[in-house]
Length: 323
Ligand code: GLV
Image (tube, rainbow, N blue to C red; front, side):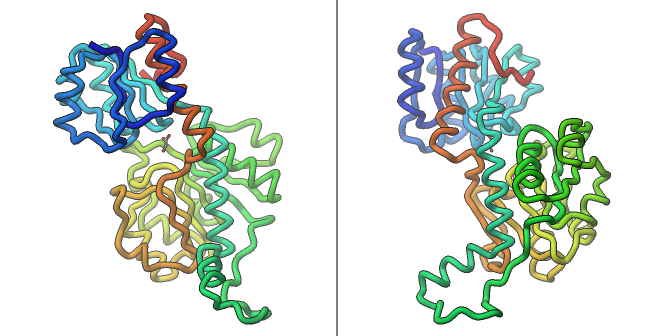
């Protein structure tokens, strides 16, 4: 019998933390995802009341039913669309996530994608490496778009959206528009941000950055209709969840020049992406879901999840419950 079932390779610090707390664990140190049936079987066999999962583990009713001893699912991510929270709640299982610790790191990547797509870094870098730079020209092959002073549209003004907006407003003199369920009074007051309806945001923004969780409401919230409302010079950035954008429509919009570019860190069917995307270079930058991907932040996320699991095991309220 163990206390925590850790689905994927984790940090030594996490294991040391459990050791020190006298919490026993099963650790899938191989870092290869267990197929769902195997995960269910091994979790049931382990008898562990805590599951430490990552965002590619599907924690659905089938898995929960296979492990009736479960008390807590501690997801190592701020997003928890991989967990059926309703099914967990119905079974009295606590679900936790890792907010805050990844906010600034993810906002850094959103801004990096925005800058890289605007200034065409993913085209300029291989050009340089290939020895193609022969002379400076006024009309060089990689002329880009200005960022400073432009309009930044933030869809979803939660922690990460606001941190991205702050970078734009304070670092790059950008006008910030945002769309979300609530006013962000600090952003309005301190950076002159404005909450607007989605259509205004789409029509007026030069850069649009998505920061919504994946829900029924946000699934495909950016599709052909919305892309058609954007400026032909606009760039869209997605560090949230792939299915927020209808990827096939985005590829068509980029191919047809409906919008200028995209900086994408997430995809509709990860780890796959629409085949058309790989052939698009101009103002297109693609990264493999590394929004939270700094060493420090991945450690902080893992420790946060471990602390959430430990709290439930010790009959305490975990720091980050989502149900
Ligand atoms: C990463 O995508 C996360 O939700 O933490």
